[in-house]
Image (cartoon, rainbow, N blue to C red):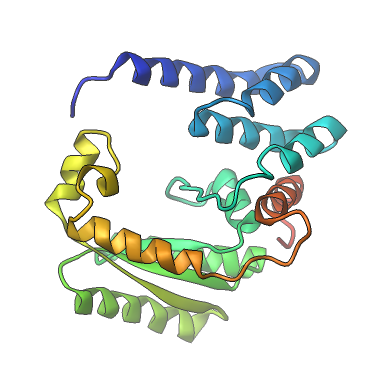
Length: 232
């Protein structure tokens, strides 16, 4: 991988500062976190919102989370792998949950386990599925069939196949250069597949709330963090 740039190092330093704030007393942490929600870097901003969700009993924190992103149209949250509290919070709050899976036993098992936990413990019953690193479109559909056969048998959920991201060396090159493949190689197979999926997302029905989708997201994020074991 290429060496880290000055911007990379500054971003990592800023992100670590935000994460370290969680250990401070509320009266010290809250003003810093509120300021970080206005950061220009989306990763820092999301880290701040994730911390802000811990302060659900604070009126200023709650209102900031509701208002700060209300002007945006769509937010895509790329969560970590696994089933941590943070992942569950974001998935419970989201309008749609997209599961990316590749045709490897560990990946299929992890995807099934995630869907099972979200369904049985958090009442999320609808999932969009993306087949990743498939060599053909048919291979992607077969992967979806494997997963949906298991969920149809044991879980009360609905899976929808979004499509396939093909195996693409140019995607690997884009990652190595720390660039989005749609910018670095816009005509590559993986970039074209992502653009098709983006058009699908653009056609998803909007949430019928007066404040918009992101306000709805932030409100649900607050609620899910306040009671992680409850129904989201």
